[in-house]
Image (cartoon, rainbow, N blue to C red; front, top):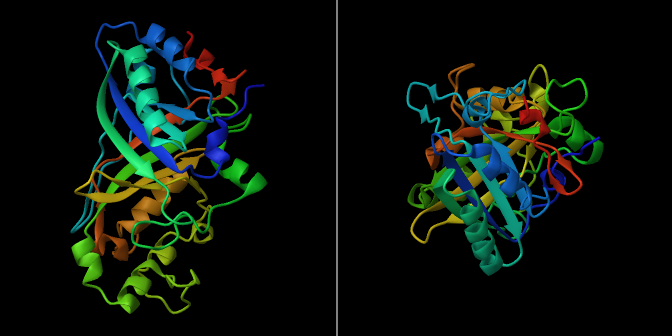
Length: 293
């Protein structure tokens, strides 16, 4: 049986590029995706297909849907769907640059690039705020159970679903907070990453404690910091066997459950939001057999 794209369960790399594309009406989408499959081994390059693209192919993937825009009293969480998403991973930013050029050429003219974000590992896997990202990630078999669709999942075995958001940090607002305020907003101490027992209800770790949901809402986060030289933030990337766990966490962060908004929104906001289906791989290539109808 085909397996998942392995990088979903691997540590984040030193460097990355995130590319989003929209399909060109009337183009040979199937041929372009077949060309793409030669570039995507699931280790150095991960691919995700949007609901609109799967529909254009005349196919369906159980569980695949569009990202829901959310609106609360003070917050707008946008939905910015694209047809195709790629996460290019590596240790050499120059090699990633040339790889993305080759992939864009292989996809043209069927797919037009709409966003490219360069990302990097900071410290031991920290956000640019200095706090460790993904502390509560499930591991080993628990990570597989959280991130990968099994035989009974509806989607092809080895599939995964990914939620992608580009968050922009306001460092002027963050720097204006005292260290105690910063720690309370996250719910952990930056110095030792220990959870703060008496953190306020708005603390991020309390808003998103995965075991506190019913059912439990575990995802596998593979987020990385980004910067374009002027602005910076976090490319939030969360893989799941479905989108349900992510949506439960996001709704609580926005205060839709109890009116308490996540303290993260004091200094950062998402500017994008999209969902994709990550097909399995077979023999080192992207397995697109689910699109054959």
